[in-house]
Amino acid sequence: MPTLFTRIIDGELPGRFVWRDEHCVAFLSIQPIRPGHTLVVPRREIDHWNDMPAELNAHVFEVARKVSLAMRKGFGCQKVGLSIVGLEVRHAHLHLMQLDQPSDMDFARQRKDVPAAEFDSAAATIRAALRELGFAGAAQRLD
Image (cartoon, rainbow, N blue to C red; front, top):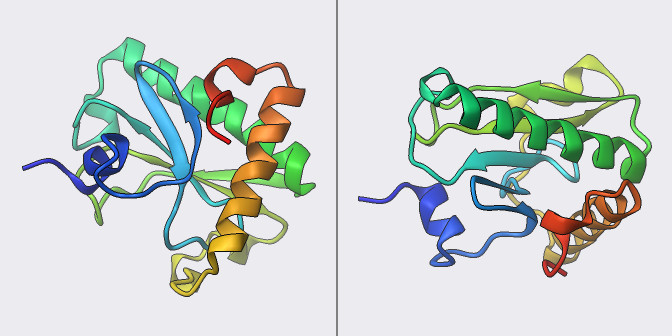
């Protein structure tokens, strides 16, 4: 049975994508800690991040780096934190969250009642920053 993330990647479930290429995607978390909380997910269903082949692992982390640069540019945060948890969905994924204080990575602060307009605005902010930084290829055609 496909994972929740595979169903999002395949379009069976909605997702607000900010990056899409042949190896991985990045889309907003449906339970963000802060606006723009993004997940970078390989297309292949691999349960644990360190089970990814080295080339795929490097690619996923490079995409995370580019998206985090866009998040810093777009949201003006001090840093972008990266977390790998993977207990909630058994499909490797990296959490990217804008940081201004340590509690900004507290998963107990996840929101479940985010208005659609807030998701749309955050995704547009990240896509625009990706284009401004010259990473338009994977962000293009997502608006």
